[in-house]
Every structure is written in structure tokens, then in C-alpha cells.
Amino acid sequence: MADQITPLDGTTAIDDKTVFEPARLSYEAASHVAATIAIEVESAIKDRYVVVAGTELLADLANLVATRVTLEGIASDYRALAAHATVAAKTHASIAAASGAETMPGSNLVEGAIPIAAAIASSLSEAVPPLAAAAAAVQAGIGLVSLFRQNVNVHGVAVGVDALAFEIEMAAQLHRRGAARVYVSELLVFEVPRNDTKSLRGAIRHAQEARAKTWSELAPLVSHLANLEAAFDAAVAEGSQERVDLTIATIRDLRRMIDPIVAPLSKVDQRLDQLQAQFAASDSQSNGLTLLARLFRAESLKARDPLFVYVRVVASGGSNRTKHTLFSNVFTGDGLSSLGGIVVSWALLDTDGSVAQGGIATHSHGAPFPKPSEATAVRLG
Image (cartoon, rainbow, N blue to C red; front, side, top):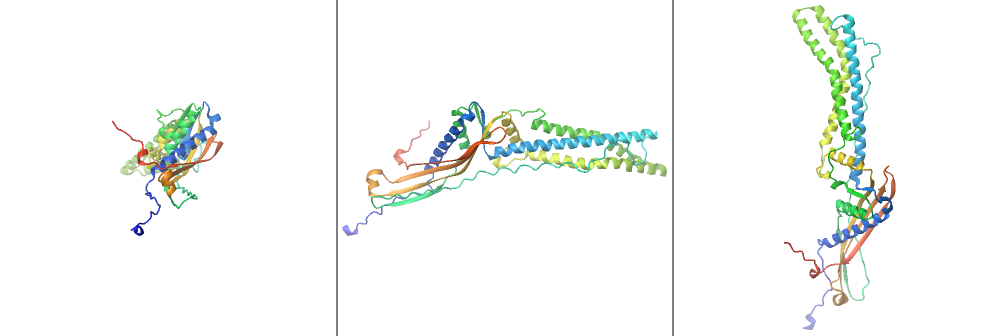
């Protein structure tokens, strides 16, 4: 009967889906990395406002500058076209006054009239939206020489450390190291945006005011052109060839003044309309925030004159390890252990955007797999 007894294989199995423990250890490693970075920048952040910045916030800051420049260009184009519309109106009025009549045929401009610019400055391209941080699985293998017969299995586990969670931990560590205020962009609640001349809101207002002023300068000429077209219909109905010829010549002369303004003005209008449509757009990666809200948020942070601590989780991962031997059964337990780790790139950015400090920080943390009896009980109520 003893011959029928099969000895144990000496193995312990663990489900490949058992990921919590490696994930928990990865977050412990993340906390260690955040503390290490905070120590590195402690002297620089003392009593300073600090923003924990990811790639998305830095892209928003770049887009903020580009948007302001675009709006300034649009407002400048409107002002130039408004000036041309004013000159055209004065020219038409001068010709009419000199002739003693309401209008006069011909295509002459008064001396000193400014020719229409051949082209209007094009909009700056938007900055490429930021790419999301990639998380790659890091597989760890541990081979130990045992005193006794053993089976060892290592199961790699894909673990993704949440970027916002790491930024919050980073902010907490920076605050512990003496920063006066620490901001995480996704958690910032800002009030009414700035409205001064150098603000984004002010730039939008100036562009809209410039548009209204340009069209108001052009409106009398357009209205007069409509009246001339009505007068042409009346002259045709009366059968007065002289009036018909005079009106046609006057309409042709007025169109020569208006058309070089209306064509570029329509293009500038289109640019402003497209920009405003982009302001209202949102995407899933920005948690439902519109582009305009993100730009206002970036402007609010920038106005505090902070230092920026850029952090990005480059990789994170872990593994479950099983080892079964007679020795471990008797003395050390079931031979289950887990490992979790993280790799982070970071940089301390000065107020001018230069990199003052930076590097790559990494840490891994391992621990025996907890037995059911070791699990912490949570009571509700």
C-alpha cells in the first residue's frame, strides 16, 4: 500500500489574475519615489508656490501662449481692415462732395489712401495635444538556490500606477518639504478668469471688439451699395439711360473700394469663428473640460508665479512569486511573495521654463504574500 502513495510535487499555484498585491506594492514604491524627488528639490521649493505638472498641463501652457498670439494677430488684422474701410468711406464721400452730387462714377481714390494688404497673417497652429503617459509591464524574475527540492514560478503582472494618484502623493511630499502652496492642475478650482489686457479673456474681448468696429466702419459703404442697386432698378424702370449708366459706374467704383476689404475680412471672421469653436470643444482625455476651461486653468496657475515640478510615470509593474519546499513548508510558510515597482521621470522647471534639476527615479518593493488570516478586517457602520 505504501507503494501506492504518491509524494507531493512540492508546488503552489497562484492565479495569474491575482494583481492587487503587486499593485499595492507598486503604489508603495511610488510613495517612496515621490519622497525621494521631494528631498532632491527641497531647497529650491522652500516657501514657494509649486505646481505638480504633467505633460497635459505643459501643453496647455504652450497652447495658452499660442492662442494669445493668434488672437492678437486676428485683432490686428481687424484694425487694419477697419482703417481701410474708414479710408474707403472718406474717399467715396470726398468724390461725392467734389462733384456736388450724391455719387460720381470713376475709380479714383483720394491722395494718401492706403492700399489693401495683399495677405493677412495666418493663424498659429495649435500645439499638439499632449500624449497620455504610457505604462509598461515590468517583469521581475528571482531565482534562488534552495537547500531542498523546490518549484519556483514567477508570474509577471501588468500594473498601472494612476498618474493623478502619483501627482497627489508628489504634492503631499513637496508640502512636507516646505513648499508654501502646492497645486495639482486637475484638482484646481479657479474663480472668474482674469480680464486684464494681457489675459486670455482680454485678448478674446479685444478680438471681438475689433471685429464689431471693422464691420461698423464698413457698414455705411455696404448700405450705400444696397441703395445704389435699388436706384439702378428705379433708373431701369424709368428708362433713363443716362441715370442707368451713371449708377452702374458708381456701383462699379464703390465695389472696387469694398471688395478688397470684404474678402480678407471674411477670412479673418472665419479664423475667429474656428478658434471659438475649438474653445468649446472637449475630449475624454481632459475629463470633459473644454479647451477654453483648460487654458483658463493654465493661466490661473501661471499667474501665481510658481515653480513647476514635472513628473511622468514611465513604467510600473510587478510579479507574484511562488516557491514550495519542505523547508519553507515547515519554517517559512507557503512560499508566496509579491513585487511591485515604478519608474518616474521628473524635472524641476524654473520660472523661465529651464530645467533646474531632474532625472529618473525608480524603486521596487517586495513583501510576502499575506495569508487570509493576515488580511485587515474592514467594518462598515
